Image (cartoon, rainbow, N blue to C red; front, side):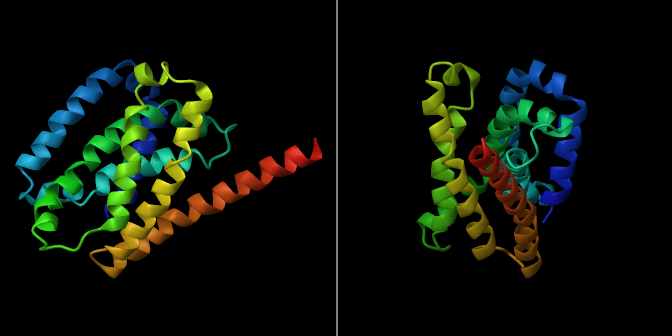
Length: 200
């Protein structure tokens, strides 16, 4: 699985190029659609495999996911939080190449229906739409926050999808290893938050 490498690269980019990402996010949103088109048109090419398999799109989502589990006081966390919206939008668009590539095989019953993957993708759609600042501004903060909590279910379905539909044992193990730090950090963060609440 190429995702760990891409995840590391995306974190480094977010840390050092946060202002540039935010300044040119509209251009990035437009550009990523052209990337998606190129991936679909050139899907038979070997170098497009990481996109078709969903590894690149997943890498963006992983950064968004792990950011929510990190200590908010860290400088790295603050950098990552500022680019969560752009990363989630770019990640979703890139991830679209994955279901689009296999849609014909699934509809023709040449491939089993990936229920967990489809479920995760459906949940991502409203999260993707409301990630745009122009849409978010029209929503009540409480409504937006409640909607974003559905991301946790999406993360769980993605993990199950990666385990069930892994193309190799190595990819299955890599998926599990990637989710271990997220689950551990998230549980620790929630424990600390509840502890502070109970002592106040």
